[in-house]
Amino acid sequence: MDLHINGNMLPNVRKVLFFFVNFEDARKKLPSYIIYEKFKNKNNTETSSTLQKVNENSENDETKYNDNVNDFCNKFSWNLENLSEITDKKLKYRDECSYLSYWAYEEIKSIFGTLDNYNKKRHIINKLNKIVSDISNRASTKKPCYIYFGNEFDKWDEWKQLHDYFKNSEHILSLVTEPNCNGCNKFCNYVKHIKTLYDKYERGCCLWGSCDDYINCDDKYNPSELLKRLKCEE
Image (cartoon, rainbow, N blue to C red; front, side, top):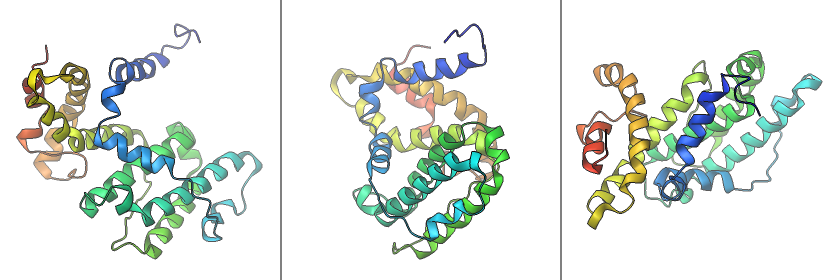
């Protein structure tokens, strides 16, 4: 692919390189990575009539979306039923549900790809929201985990990155106490990137307290403070 032909591709390419160059080994040890991998690796084969509703009255060109959405619904149902086991029963249910929510957003984003596709297929999304709600209502877990796919498609990725950072921050902080802080430098670019997102959302979120599922306003976890503790270069 000639990156000079389409300049719009460059930010996405840089983003991929950013996260995977000199960071992959460290990333695989993060709590969020481990949990998301467990969500992805579950091979659920259940196909119920409830989960097939998205196929009704569909156009031929929508088959791939319907198939992928049905596959997602099966995975979501299995993951919800086994949520505590997947997270090793170490988390509060609210945190378990937040992980499942951001995994779900990422899955749906990968299915539809672009905001334009997502908006054009709102009739599929409407069916999906009904199915996911039904799955949550009938789940045998102690509490439902309600997820709604609304109009924030273009914000899901940034919200997930912030959510995961705050879930990973204790692990990263624990490295600071190790002799010589082996591997600390691998997190510097990651935390610098998160700081740009944090600065974007922090004022509105911490002032109104409306983003508590992906922003933690405790100064201890402020990316600027973590950068200092990691002794990252400016």
